[in-house]
Length: 332
Image 1 (cartoon, one colour):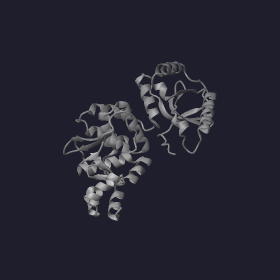
Image 2: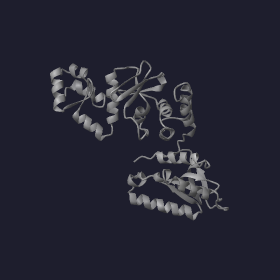
Image 3: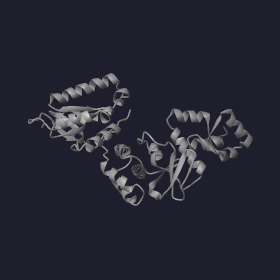
Image 4: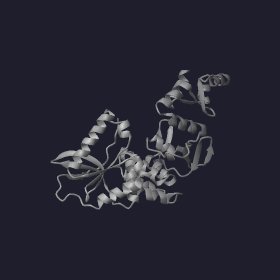
């Protein structure tokens, strides 16, 4: 590849345009031959990537980024920004597990739809747009409010919790973004979502579990509680009902199949058992809630929780329970 074209592609995660190719000396027939041979792959009309670069994007999980860059280049719109769930993915936030995979954009000038993309016409203030290399995308706060206006409440809270946990956004920024969107379609939905967000949740399962507890009319639990005995940290529990001394652990399978801090699954399972035994020895009652318990297994889970919460905890406590100020972001 000519150095001029290679440089243009490098700036855009491997993506380049027909104009870039012509500037580097590639003629129409040569471009057509490279496409026909499979050496170049057409992402959009007049927008290309080499087969090797596309394979690398797939391998490294950057295919969505490549597709967003391609749409922005094809639209050639300086005012458009990637938005909604497409921007959420670029920010590394959890996105809805169902629905369209079309690239979503927002443009103050016009709205349109095409193959694999949808542009919503809507206001975009300068502070609501971020530029990351070749990408224009909505800010984290604007992205989350757009999700809250258009996606399910659960999906929106999961994304907000993750953004707060990762420090992508602050609670005050969410409140300001919701206020700014007060007259937009879906604004009442967004206003209901923001008060439910809590950056102490360390996984989507914890968020969905918390919403299940609230939806059942159970008392709101404290999150990320440190349980100590004789000043020794026994464990940190996901949710805590203080009056009944009941700890709730949201037990995601990923904890065992893809553990963090270099631990193997057997070690994780052993540590979890030892921690739970230590908590029970202090008269703390522990309830483990897995993904299935939030679905068809919820009635039985709710009954068990209600029974436990109806019984006061130990009168003389051999432990203390202290809330952490925030959750801990788990990385490899």
